[in-house]
Amino acid sequence: MAADVCAVIVSGGSGSRFGNPGGKQLMEVAGRPLMSWCIAAFDRAPSVGHIVVVCPAAQADEVRSRAIVPFGFATPITFAPAGATRQDSTRAGLCATPASMRYVAVHDGARPLIAVETIEAAIAALRDDESLDGVVCGQPAVDTLKVVEDGAITDTPDRARFWTVQTPQVFSVEALRRSYDVVDATGFVGTDDASLVERAGGRVRVVESPRDNLKVTLPEDLVPIEAMLRARG
Image 1 (tube, one colour):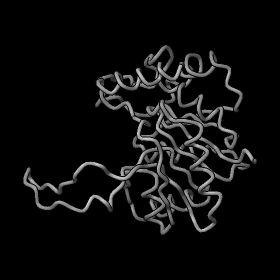
Image 2 (tube, rainbow, N blue to C red; image 1 turned 90 degrees about the vertical axis):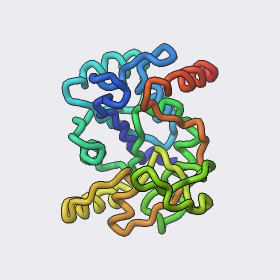
Image 3 (cartoon, rainbow, N blue to C red; image 1 turned 90 degrees about the horizontal axis):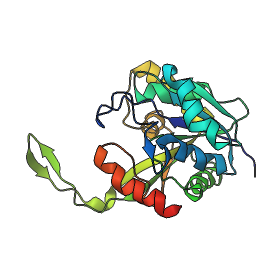
């Protein structure tokens, strides 16, 4: 199996929703920095040949010394500076992707529960279908959905048509690069990386993945995530 995937770990958030102005990527969770958990998963994934960590430039040395060096990762790891938006940060990671990589797997640095099996399943789905430009991990919606305007419900759509999506989101390097050409030409701002590829006319498939791939967004998210990490040992 070729190790032709570059993992782009995006950890450029300001931590404003979490209430930590310095960001949350280096917070201790289950005994180690938050972002080191997802780096470890991509380090163990056989298809991943390189990892790019996207973080604020001023924090790169601290991230390296606290979240990377102590854990002896085998996969080459380099850094890219976070941008003003998530879209800009992903672009920075893409630009730092080595030319030898055929695919890029973009992952939130605040999703520490990601499993190697989930990473490899998404990559395999993209590799196995040449008509695809990308694959995203997600699950069918289980809650009832409402369309709300000014606090009033205006519609209850059929939830069978809806999925919630997460990361990793895996793309061919060329497809993601083309999407940024469209972004530059149109000024489009997407809500996730897949929306950029979709906007450029790319074909993106969703693959069902475990629901425990949770993201640390608010302080209360830490309790279940830390419990699950400790249960995994």
